[in-house]
Image (cartoon, rainbow, N blue to C red; front, side):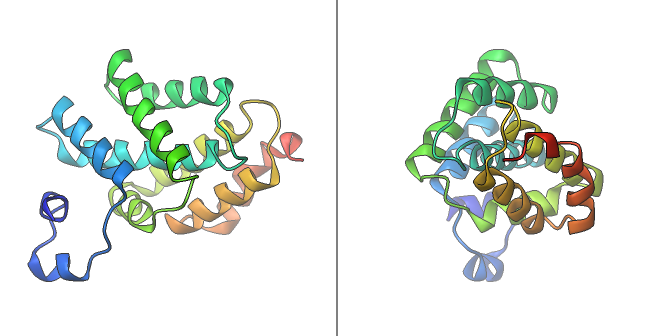
Length: 171
């Protein structure tokens, strides 16, 4: 229950809140240790990493090209050093594979709450770019991007517009 308190949910909200995944909880602990002064940024990055992991694993495995792409994206969206990025991605990758890429609605809800509209749109672009990292977007990856986009509140028309830039990779 400490995670709900840490997320800023009072007792009444904690009783109604859905539990977070083990992956998200581990990432929060790591990121909180890295930057204890910026809890909101830690939650944002943990959610971002978990959502990247879902798309990377949508086709049943995470390729080395996808891992490199995830690393670049997390580096660009945080002030973490390369060792910290590696640690966060190792946890995200391990937990994603262990959980077989199962969605965690709580992670999407947290991301949606913390991210601005521009950041949500940027997430969609990152998810498509990650799916296209190996120059092929499998149907399962495309569906994962669409599902995550809906979960974080991005208008389907915006998703379609962003997806147009990656249509050549679609199979």
